[in-house]
Structure formats: C-alpha cells, structure tokens
Image (cartoon, rainbow, N blue to C red):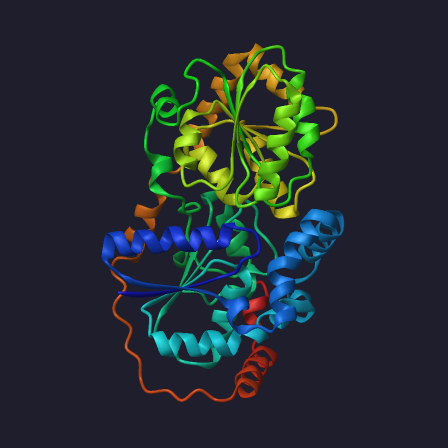
Length: 408
C-alpha cells in the first residue's frame, strides 16, 4: 500500500495529523507513506508565505478581520464562493500535486487542508486519477468551501452532527464517515494521574494545571502569572511552550521573579503530551481541533481563551455546549474559573464525565478499518502537460461544471 498525504504548515494541526496518520499506516500496514507540504513545495514564495506564515500573522494580529472575512464567506452563496477565491488558492499547487501523484503512484491520496482537498477534486474532474481521494475535517464546525471538495471518495468528518450540513452541500451519505479527528493512540489509553505524575516527576498530591502555550495566544505571559497569583490554593503548573524557545525563556524569567507558592514545570517542545494530559486535572489553552480532541479523548476539562480564529471559536462552542470546558474572558478570568473548580471539585468531575460522553476512542483504528479494503491503484503511462495547460483545463472544467460548488 502506498499513501500520499498533502498538508500545509498553517498552524500545526495539519502537519501533526499527517504525521499521526503516517505512523499508523506504517505501523499497521507497513505502508509506504510520503508527506508533502504542498504550498512549501509547489507554490511561489509569496503564496507559500501567505498560506503558512500569513495565517499565523492574521490570527496573532488581525483576528477580528480574519473572522469577519470568514463569516462573510459563510453567508455567501456557494456559487459566489466559487468565483470569490478558493480555486485561486489551488491553482499554484495543482501542477505539482498532479505530478507528485503520477510520480509516486499512491493507492490513497489524503488532504489534511481544505484547499488541498479542493485541488485534488478539481484535478479529478480533468484527469483519470486511479488513487482514492480522502479529505478530512480538523475542526468541530463546518467551514465554507467544503462543497468544492464534493468529488472526494471519502469525506471523514468530525461527528455525526456534521452529516446534515455536508448532505446539504451535495455530499452523499456513502461519502461521509463521522469518525472524529485522528489523534495518537496514547490519548485513548488509560493512565491514572498518580502513575503519570510519578513518571513525569511531578508532585503526586497537587492539583495540576497544564497551559498549552503555543502559536498565537491572546493572553500575555505576564497576565497569566498575575492571574495564578490570585489563587488561594497551591497548585502545580506545567507550561508547554511548543517549539518557541523565546516563550519558554520568558516564562522562566517571570517564574524566577514571581516568588510564587505554586510549583512550576516550564518545558519547551515535548513528545509526552499524552502523559502530561493523564497527569493533569485541567487544561488552559486555545481551541485548536487536535488539542480539543486530545483533551476530550483524555476526559480532561478545559479552559479556553478568548480572541480565537473563527474555526477555533466553533471548537470552543462545541466544548462548552457539551459541558467539557469553561470560557475565559474579561469577566470570567483565569483565576476566577480555576478557583471555581478548586472550590467545587464536583463540577470538574462533571466536566470530565461529559467528555467521556462525546469522545471517540481509538480513532486511528476506525480510519484503518474503513480503508483496509481499498485495492491497489493501477496507473497507465501519462505525460503531464505544461503547468499552464493543467490550470487552463481545470478552469474550463469549473466554468462548464460548477456542480461541485453548488448545493443540490
């Protein structure tokens, strides 16, 4: 079995998902798996920057504008969305994606980002691609443009509740698989708090808060430390800074100056998130689809910060509506919400139980079960035209057949 995964570096979720899938395919099937960051490999520098770095800058500094554009797209008619821009973001990578497919000759092609799912289905309109095409959602809301990926062979969605929205966008029942967002198997494994804390050299008897401080984070390090000072009870705090050495160093300095009664474990990048979540009582973080899924799977209550990109706002709403998280804003501050849960441990336990009601365990195994019978793809000799010819063919196909971007 050969599997080709196209991803992007906008945020970390798409790449993380690609790597989780790769590990599982190799472990379970001994598959040959190739991951390609499509915009980094095939698009020009400006387009690659806009998709990868530009997204982070928008979320860090212009999230209000980003969300306004997002919601405007949601309200627009699907046929107008087609003309407005999604395809323009696929043309720069279409030729490279097509060439990669016929060079690697995969049996399955996976898109971890909506633009790449649209790229693949547009190519499928024009070229006979033998591989099965799989797209998947990585958030708990339905973003605009998914109707433009309607020709995917498999559409893996986050939950049963999404089905109606995708059916209204023209997908068939047989395309839709409400399996959840794939996360590492460790999040489905039971590891009691005491054992996890011992393995991580944490205090075994202290309430444990983990702060997932990665990417764009609207609350400053200084503000977080100020809020933690207000707690009436001593706790231990694990701070995960991702790959940002600057963020870790800043926290180190603040912790040293603070003379806080709390116990801090300030770390950078780690591959022990599953163990850390097992050791934790509560998470403070953003609303990224993967982190949300990991916390739900671990039955771990969350505090979700404000000022998020729209898709993460939907993730937060999903958690709050299901009783798995509390909101953080200027009225419900970090200290207020943590103190509430310290004073009422039964509320914390209720949130954990609510997570168990909606979580999906061993999601990767469910993915493998669906895909196990896909036959080997048979490729014929194929001479790819010039890049301009490929894009011209796609544009003509879209001009005369827009059904993939309209509701039925």
